[in-house]
Amino acid sequence: MRSEATTATAPAAAWRAALAQRLRPLIGSWRRATAALDARPPRERAALGAMAVAALVALELLVVWPIRDQRGAVVGAVQAQLQADAAARQALQEQQEAEASTWQARLIKAERELRNHGHGHARGEALGTWLQRALADQAVALVALRDLGVQEAETPAAAAEAHPAAPAAASSAAAPAAATTPAGTSAATAEPAALPLFRLRYELTLDGEVASLTAAVQALGQRMRPLRIERLRVAAGVGGVGARATLVFVIVTPERAWISL
Image (cartoon, rainbow, N blue to C red; front, side, top):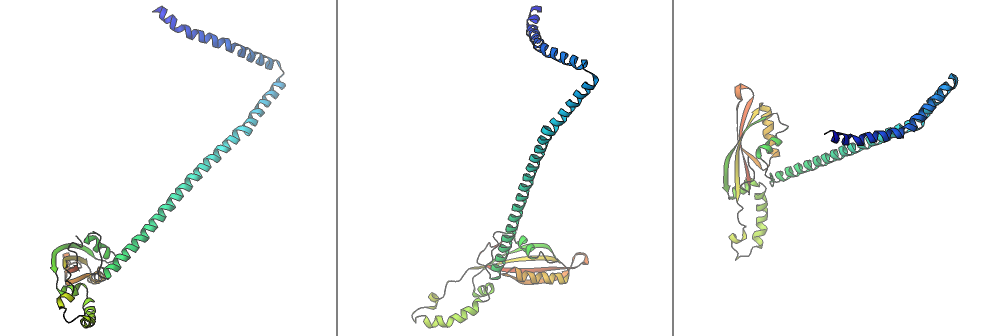
């Protein structure tokens, strides 16, 4: 065991001896320099110390401070670039939000115009959400919405109910059509096939003041065409506060599942 420990410590001892051998000239030079400095008069030693301090100050002024200034400039440039990138991202996000809002407003306007012409489509949107958007600026509360079923109607009366302007146009076009129709042609072949229509009936319950309920009913009639109010009943509100309006409205459309709750 002792021989193994001696073998393990031998390289370390050899390394220390080699290091001492290399440092011996440096230690000797340092001792000679300190001895020569101690041998000089105090005035010369003070002058040498002042020169050393001046050299250190010059080194700091000429080397350390420029490096510090360069570091500060680099850090400032990096921070400015980061701020510029953040501002650009913020501006891009605001621009995208503004464009999205513009397109959303155009889409809502186009849908409203289509509904005003009787060709509105809800794009799979829930009827409750559609009603809430139509009543967003009305001081009423949407309490309940109930589906009363779908009725199929193919009669001319149902077509006139869906498109009130159709009878006038049909009557104005009847005379020229009769004049140009050959005598041998039957009326059944001249008239187009009846368009299948469906009556979607819903019941809506609203709470609010009487004036607010009146304004809300008028807004529904104007903003949710082809919606047609069929029946309206107004009663006292819950607990005698305000009023409650229950209205049944009909939407006549050629699509059976035009909109869902």
